[in-house]
Amino acid sequence: MHTLPYWRLSGYYFFYFAFIGAFSPYFGLYLQSLSFSAWDIGLLMSQMQLMRLFAPYVWGVLADRLAQRIVVVRLAALLSLLGFLAFFTVRSFEAMLIAMALLAFFWSAALPLVETVTFDHLRQEPARYSRIRLWGSIGFIVAVMGTGAVLDSLPLPSLLWVIVGTLIGILFYALAVPEAPSQSSADEHLPVAAILRQTRIRALFAACFAMSAAHGALYVFYSIHLADHHYSTFLVGSLWSLGVLAEIVVFFFMVGLLRRFGLRTILLVSFAAAVVRFLLIGWGVAWLSVIVLAQLLHGLTFGAYHAAAIVAINRWFPGRCQARGQALYSSVSFGAGGLVGSLLSGWTWERWGAAPTYALSSAFALVGLLFVARWVKRTDLDEVGEKEPLRVADGSHP
Image (tube, rainbow, N blue to C red; front, side):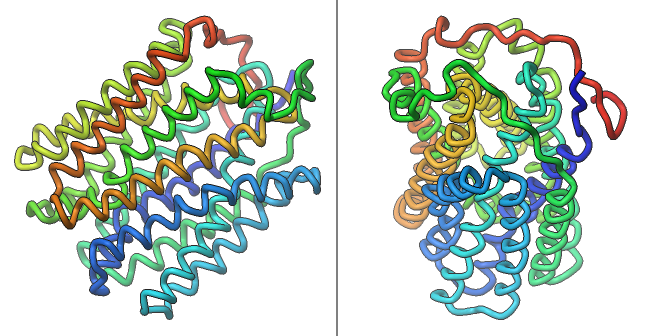
């Protein structure tokens, strides 16, 4: 029986997404306090997506050559921490852009590799991924709420120290997570290019690109959008946390949902929810109840969507192709899609305003829905079953 390092993997996800919880909702406000324009903020924040275009694949190749994925994860964690320290001294746009690009290049390296290691530890139970990944969502909530409380009483530059704390946590658990032997597969020598020629793969990647592009305005301007309508910093953090609480609930029940409804249905519902959600955010910000509903839909637009997509990628990229499959998923969706969404939202925000910008996000989600509906068939996505549970080595059963 395989021993699953549940708490060490969960701890890494906790701090990795705690970094996002401290960085994404509030760093735009910090940049705004330095008198950067909306376009400048969009360009600076887009570096996180720009580096995801190629950095995960570059680091994945390095991990393949070294045959030591966790070593690369640890190196990326250390360099991310050292790179972020530059923000304590830089102030000009040019210097800030370089610092952001370096941080993004190092930070974006790790997650696809950790995802691959996690699936290798899970072996024949990929559906249980969501039970580990939900700790990332918990870390996000803790960071969002905690950072919001800190910034309600301390000046915005205090944010830098909060982010440093999350990066230290990432480094600690990167040192604790053990390597897992790669799983063998009859198709493991199938060239990645041959896999990418499959219609279902290209359709899913196109849909993932569209979903990430749809979220661009959310991650860059959501906090600013709420602040412009007189939401307090604490309420902004609470709304971010509400969305992630919905995500946690979905992650917790994902094994059962996958078995009952299947991957394709979950993907279709997630994209449909995104179409509605971004219209609500753009046009209903004056009503707290509407924004609350929109945030609850995050459980579908990210939680269900991501869990289903990543299980599909793990299945369709077998054996030694899995790391590159995860890297490509990260590059195409969070990289290319996120970059397009961030840059477009910066451009449309200044020219058209918030509501049309989020309407464009809704349109991206609709395009993704059409890709899944038309070209990803139920026969491509077999039902996910759960086998006997793994034994947890460093804590109680998840």
